[in-house]
Amino acid sequence: MKKRAYIYMAFFFVVVLLAACGGEQEEDVQLKRTAIPEKTIEVVDKNPGKVIVDSSIALNRNPFKSYLALEEVVGEGRVRTALECCDLQVFRIMAIISGIEDSRVRIVSPDGKRYDVGKGDLIGSREGRVYAITPKGLIVDELVKDEKSGKMIRTRVELRLPSAGTKKD
Image 1 (cartoon, rainbow, N blue to C red):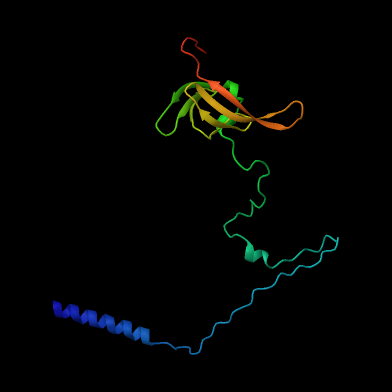
Image 2: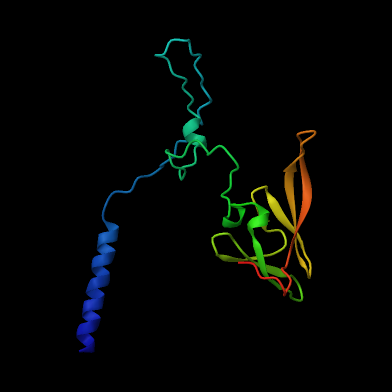
């Protein structure tokens, strides 16, 4: 049995070696490098038939970017969160969660959903950002338009935790 296995393995190696030895070999193969084409721009007349030709566009184009998304969306450039839907006064503070490192505030939005908000989170329709969390409530830094000058001014608004005696529905 061992002898037959050795014969098969020897036959296999001989076939592989003979297959690798066949064929012609090319000598002195040299690769030719092509020069990168310079930018060529044709001057366009006001005739609608002529087009600007720029050969470097293909070299600088991102191959992973979609042709359909060539123009970026004009606007803020970010998606507004669910907490940026309404004015600050419609939010209610349920609880203040204080910890060793950072405190959080649990608030209820007008649609009844609960959110945990920390320092630096965005809240409110006037680009408000949580400035500080105190034992009594939440201080939000937001933009307000000044009626006299018409300029946008940063103001701090405080949302307080409702006292234990009053109940809001």
